[in-house]
Length: 542
Image (cartoon, rainbow, N blue to C red; front, side, top):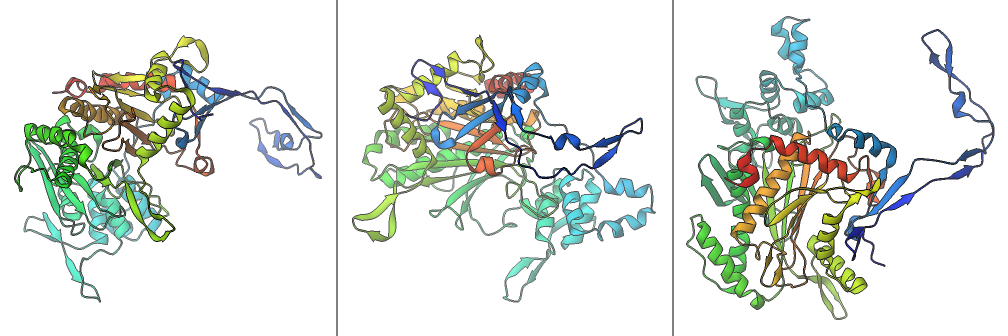
């Protein structure tokens, strides 16, 4: 049987565990100890931890088990006790707002101000890391930046750049004492922008990656970097908000900014495919116009059958930077909003060649969706995504099968943003293309016309804005796309996965067992509430 929660009748299948069990007690000794005293002075002991005989559990909390729509994404388990509390107040599904943090202000109450800098720069490294990540005091952050690096300034004291030195190998490097501390300071929203630019944002300050694309319109400005030294073996690209368009929060990100970030992705993919097909592209050293881009896409689409292999696309976005006091990097390499993408070949040469196996399939996450679509078709003789959409429209609450539970958060004529029935992170959202072409479902950006692309850009921004309103500081976003030229009914899908303070990932997640403390229907209610805070031009397009 296919391991998925959807069924042909347009229903989600949810399992329920109703635990009842007995426990034999093999303990030899009682280690009774006093834990403290109550308000009336009576001792509080741990006697409840040492029962005399065997134990019987007749009515433990129900645990709901929901196979993910896609079997490769594991299974979600919902604790009914936790979820019931959230159901009573869906608005409680959020993180607290960050409070102001300034060690300098605290120190000023106890020591002369001239001693504060000396104290700050003599703090142990773990304390420095914690302060660099959480301080909201701009002056304090500047002090820490000058402590761990050397800069040059103009006569007014404005930083002009970093000071560079040669290492023993003759390489020219920025004069930085503690790179992790330096990066953490530079990735703090409250550091003055002029220091952010000098430390990490000015092109070239983080390395020699060439800028090979650019989007500029109004106050939006985006650079496209070529990542030659990529962990992706065939290289990839990164679109970064430029140093004169600083965006450290998704609430600062405009519709035009998102259009620019995504435009460079579309442009690069269409141009790359055109080159493979021998199709001429508009002149170099110039941003392709919207009309030219759409014409190029249509030409590529009409000739995609001539491609030597079915390539795929890879797109992702790590938003948010953090570091622990012990030095563990918790998320992205930098806070400044950026996205990454690449083309994925269909196959790759094997190292030694085993028999006739000179090639093997190159990995693409979208292929895992394709496998799920094929397995579902074989099992039920039906189209996977048609039944998925039907299940979303027909959804009933997990805790009340008689009550409708809307999982859809926002939609337009081309896409829907929704809460998946089985969430891989407690706040996961997904965005799916619902529009079709004359040839069927739209499964990749080559099949997406300009209106669908606008809807995608808008839906991605709406998802990020909602999660930001709920307090999410770190969000991983990924694309599941169909191989170019494939015709399997696969729909283009995006997943948005926040990292929450209490569920960063442990042994359960390593087994693809995802623990959730709310019902998906209640999270959808909470997300729809956040739509009220999002500008109309973002929701409907400017």
